[in-house]
Length: 297
Image (cartoon, rainbow, N blue to C red):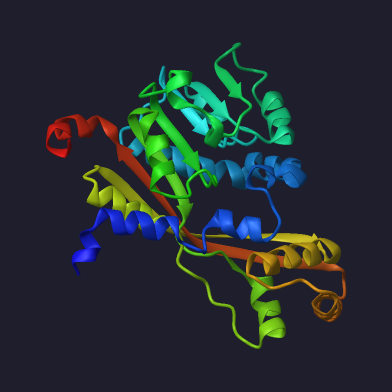
């Protein structure tokens, strides 16, 4: 039980966590910084369609309900993508620094911010992991640091780097469990003779270490679902990537088995995929920390 309150053990356990989002991407042969290159335009369309705007609005409203104010605020949006949050931040009066390293997403971000005054949304085309916070002058430089579902967070050290940039608030969202994918539930038993089981993800480490280290924060875990329709060819490619990420070598035999299944189960050639999962959000209140900084040092 003493280990439950041992920060060092939890930090090490997170560092060694094998089922991280980043590890899954790398097992699938995907460089995290390039993960959205091939589907940047589709992602952009989904982010700014009616349903995407509703999702964004729910998060914005939650932040404002916790006391975050955007008018004249400075916001660092890490992993800004095509501006899914940078744009509404700017619409509500914030000055935004958008960090994004994917060139296709940067091109779309530039298109999406053309209606704002020059420099209201400043694009930093770099990986946050490569940025020297002190050299940039970013230490406690932003009223809000915002990071949504971005593979920058891999351990507690990466959290500290993000927190260093924040003056008042820091928002981080992460998977709270592995994504449940309807097609994976169909295919996994064919490949392994076992049902597919979701796993706990890294959000638990984040919350527990914030607690142990004395931070003040609000957290929320929700279950969200989305449905997409893709071609059989696209579904096959997605499945092969998923299998790589789960330690399965996508050989010719598996490809043949999956292809035959898709032909039988989806004769129209269109495959409906439902993705659902638990997602965790945490808003850290840095302005509260000054009250206790003497005790924590």
